[in-house]
Image (tube, rainbow, N blue to C red; front, side, top):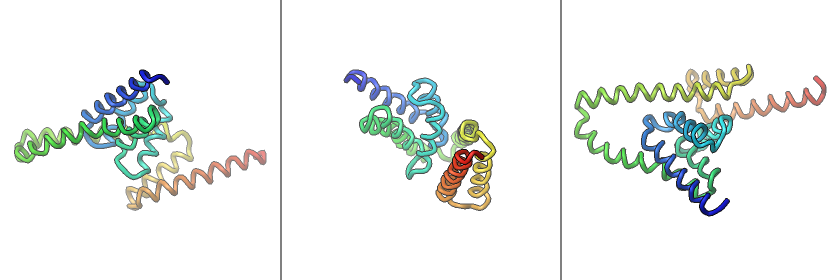
Length: 190
């Protein structure tokens, strides 16, 4: 990869992640549909299956999912420099916006128009998170076994109040055992 090409990728990473960071409300999960649109559809940096794997990895390591996802994409595209620029790109606009808005919010927090606007934004964020969950579900849950794992994980986290980390680790072990048993049956001709 030539120097001009590397600089162009770095520039595009910074622009893309700044754009996502500047317009995404609702935190990391609200950003997922925007990231998928930018990284998969518009830029073609990763495909649909890869972005789901990246989301899963970003969710299961410590940190904010949007920052983790951007950093992973940046690293994949341009190494350490790409990871750093992607992390800065997704974080800097949010930091600047929150910094500016926090002082304004303190002055206008009792204003009914401001409260009504935040009510609308909150509702839209729920829709964004729901859309992200549906897209992840469509791509990740392809067979009855995956559906059973998804339902069991949802039940364990929502109703049994189990820690998500333990659910993810358990699902990984169950998936591994299931795959090994299936492979063993294939080898034995069963």
